[in-house]
Length: 416
Ligand code: HGY
Ligand code: MN
Ligand code: MN
Ligand code: MN
Image 1: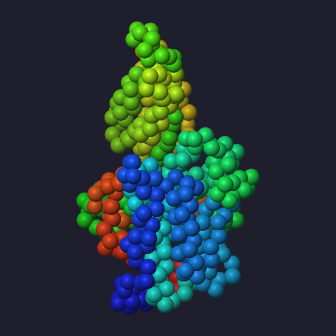
Image 2 (image 1 turned 90 degrees about the horizontal axis):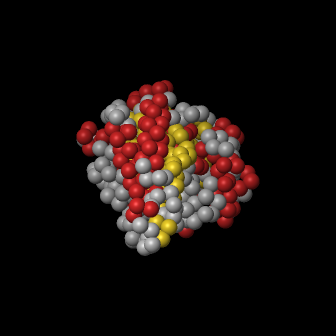
Image 3 (image 1 turned 30 degrees about the horizontal axis):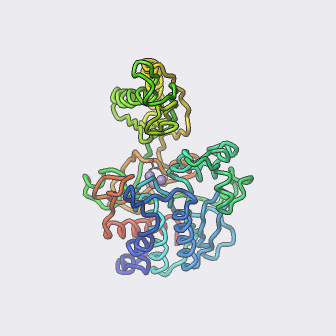
């Protein structure tokens, strides 16, 4: 790499902090704190438009594919869009999420292009930026829905029929967002253009705090899955129904949450979470007829994840029966543990010799794309170690260090 040190480190026009400041007020959630940017909501659509506008300001050629993935191409005079080096992330958030989970990767991709342009050379391979919709699965329940559609990791008919909490189908919401739902699904042509994918993401744990480093390279992504448990009892009147005459699914659900914790504790390294529980119909003076609760279970060994879920299911049936209720388990999405491409990882190790290697307990679109193409991740220090929460944070200097590292990786991979 012949970039002289001065040119390489000089801040280019679009710093990450400056780009993040431009979207800092979009999708703020006054009630929960943090940000709520469900896919194809007004807030997330605003961020999508912001990205496309920023890309066009950088003379990148933008397109929205049939699955709603946004692309911005730096063709660099190459006719064919093949063997491209692609970087990007997502703009949707969890409810009440932090500012950086997703957007940091998108802003850093834009800032990395600024750095590369500032170094004044043209890549030998096309470079593209990508934004994947519904990475969090917060609206339609399936994590990485956009990258799963793109890669064929979800059946398009199932995707079209997914419903959001208000009962809107993905097909209707996607159509309202300008897509033609008839055409969502595997897109081998779009995938064939990609030679390597690198996602930069805020670290969602404490690894870089403990290592006291600003940037790390990813090694693996923990396998994880989501299941819905429906506990069914007898809905009734809160005033006329004596306690001994009840079959209350909320009581059963309360026991099941403990079952979830106990099942995970039996397997070192397992994580099992109930982050969402919805009594139906949900009236204060109504004994619920059923309760839906969602499981998120993760472990480095996919067989252990399966064993934890199996135990939870068996124990939940027992806990429910003790309250005269029944339980139904439904798998919503499953992502196997992913180990990133060794050749790409070692190349990134050469390009970023000071960056330690981290595995991550968080799921990412990179984890879905890794099934079919060389994929890697970079992580940027989060000094709170907290994520999926308004407390999530990245210091400006670390954010710039991340973008510089991403620029070095893109330069090293795209060749000059
Ligand atoms: O859930 C996850 O691990 C990711 O943040 N979507
Ligand atoms: Mn994320
Ligand atoms: Mn997330
Ligand atoms: Mn992700």
